[in-house]
Length: 285
Image (cartoon, rainbow, N blue to C red):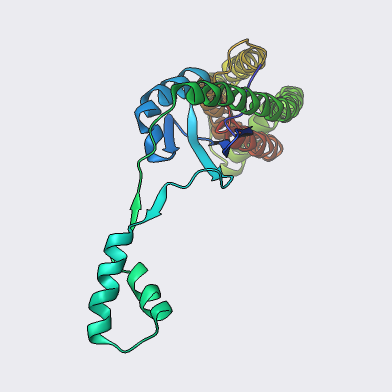
């Protein structure tokens, strides 16, 4: 079953001192493009995260984020008292201000706060890793649901092209007859003497050049192949895109050979349906 490259997943992990939110977004892309945002103390795990995302999500523009919201139980920045006092002493010599104003100025100066580096807790990371797995599962389910919508649209467009192709097959004999009559009339208007046998030979050769039997057969095969790939266990957007290119080649050839307004109108309708398929196939994983 096909999957969309568009997806979203979010999971919240509540710990005693913090709330950790894992968020995953994906959009269509020719290849895998992973962007990771996380606190610096988790950076050593970034490579593992990238490998996990690559193995599970395969393709797309992936935005992965870890957000931390502290519950107030931990404070990683502390006032550097000695530095602040020294700043205040120096400021007293420069300005005549109240102590509270001196304090406000001092805490804005460099090194007034010292930040304690938080170390990675492996037990905490195990919980985060399980939360990441849950989030990946959510985005995959999202992609599958989006894929079902794409599948319904593809099947509709393919059916429309098949119906238009049947109309082309139905009017093809009329096209050949009209082409023959048009050429015959043109010769008569010239009032030129012609060798009827030679004319028939040339006419047959010309009509053979306009024959679209091979294009009709190949287009049918491509349509069937496309439908088969839609039901494949593996979602392969690149293969679907390749098949649409082959369909386009046959439809374009039919259009160039048609030489018949009614058929050209039908070819335009097929091209319109195919363009919609091409647009949607860009979203397929």
